[in-house]
Length: 168
Image 1 (cartoon, rainbow, N blue to C red):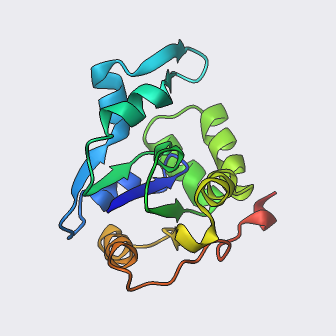
Image 2 (spheres, rainbow, N blue to C red):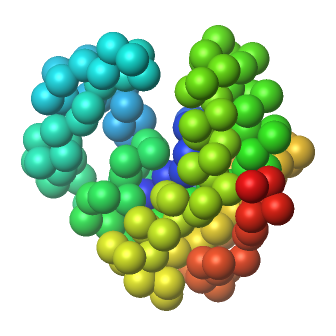
Image 3 (cartoon, helix red, strand yellow):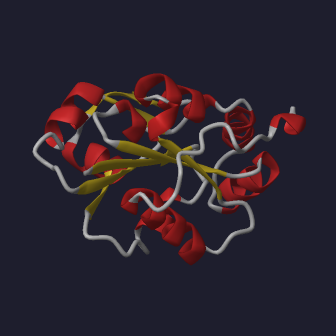
């Protein structure tokens, strides 16, 4: 099984996937992209790279039993997509605490409120394969347990159950 754990930066993907109790390997795609140069350009304004998704897909194409952790993982061929969500105010705080600029924190908070990654995941994989988990004020171990339940099929798909539209 191939599982994408995705979400806006700051929602807790890497922290939760590092704590998973699953028989699947975890690949932190953002690290792979940077370490192996799987990007087309550097976005100086956002202090980030623009991943070459074809190269990323090729790099992980031979991995069948894997959890792919990244805000881009829902763009890949996977069986299930877990979208981690976080209230935009908490997300902004998390991003600022880890040193992101105010502009980047605000941009990501707005994207979270607009369900950007959720909409992309549902469009690419269908609502029957998408699981939303709200990480706001939750312990990372509890989030990891919810991800494991989605992987094991012990949780129903839940696209569209989390909303932060009031933030806007």
